[in-house]
Image 1 (cartoon, rainbow, N blue to C red):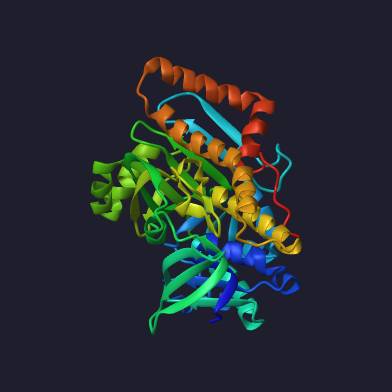
Image 2 (cartoon, rainbow, N blue to C red):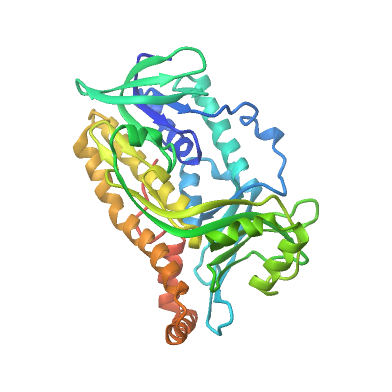
Length: 417
């Protein structure tokens, strides 16, 4: 590795890898040297030719705006070979009459969003990055982590632990994209607020007995919201991705059920609107909380993704919000590089942060308040929720406004060309 980099990105998950891809489009022209550092080994994940879809593959819902970002990064043509479009979204509350339906055709877009297996997205990103490793624009260091970072003489001084020997290097900008449990964030004294929802998200893929017709369901229940996302067929089996939010004490109980018992419990809770559930894949769960870093930028430091904000999975906006942050940061950094400005300049990073605040507040507040609103067991409030969903369903202007927000089109898109 070099002794100095223009940018060091800590964390090569979907957020960190996407930022690297956005910057590397112009790295040669702007003479940028970038290091991407990932604690986990990634052997065998760089070859998309060996990719095999899995019934159990964890999935992400990409908003239409996120697909446009990947289009700018020249990755969408490859990605779309393994994505399932969302043509319709059906929003309802269990046991109530209110429902709202969003349609891509009405909004004049090819899809409201797309569902992609995380493994496929990762492999497409890594194969793309490997091309730049070969062109010497990028050093991709796996099995390593930044353990210390401090600003000295206008540069970030980094201590990096590897499987061999510790490394020391400097960078103009350290980007922390190392997740919601970022140890480096804590070591640097960056505080955060945290609200625990006392809920778990249970995540798995399920088989259904009929075609899903590209419909995504958001269904509110008295124990928490459920989402059912359309997936590509696997071995002629119709599949959907399930995100089931339950109170903490119920999560372990559901994980302990047999497959047959789990399918039965899911059918009772969700109903038969999507058909009959026939199979269930491996189940995962994680506790839900709202977490926000008190600082997202410092001189020489920027924080992205879950390290900056972790939100409730309702409406599936977490990664899409992070990706819009990736695009905005890349736009600011590329602009600074073209103007000969330091990439660690605080004023430039502050302007980036300010450009993101409105979108972050709106998205986080929508996720948080929607979850809390539908959790209240009150007959009058339930009637109001029904009326609100029905009004949304019959009012074209409101539906378009809501749809554009869900698609990530409510704020101007970053220009990464």
